[in-house]
Length: 118
Image (cartoon, rainbow, N blue to C red; front, side, top):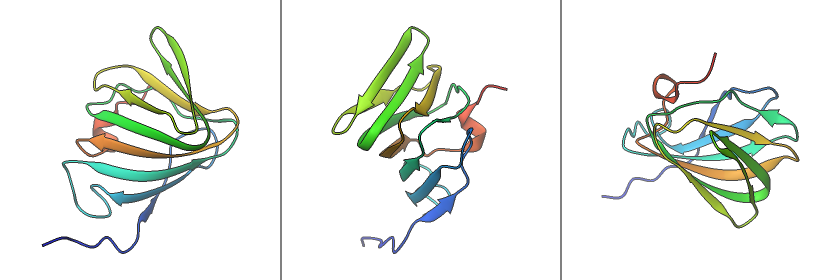
C-alpha cells in the first residue's frame, strides 16, 4: 500500500549561514534508510564544511546556483541542471548567490555517514 507523506520535517543545517532543509523522505521524517529526499533553500553566501559521505547524492537545482567543489576543481550547477556526487568523493557545497534545490541520497543521509571536515 502506498504511504502518504503529509508534510516534511525541518532539519537543522550545517554551514556558515542558516539554511532550510525540509526532509520529505529519510531517516527522520519517514524512517526510511534506503533513500532520502529533501528540499533545500540556501541564502547567498552559504557554505558547509567539506565532506566525504558514504552515500551517493543526486541534486537538482530549482533556483539560483549550487557550487560543488571537489578534489579537482569546482562545478556551478544552475537552474534545470543536476549533479551526481558519488560516495567516497570529497565535496563541498555552497551557494554564492543563494539556491533552492532537491537532494536525493542513497542510502539516506545521516550525520554519522556524511564525514564532514573538522
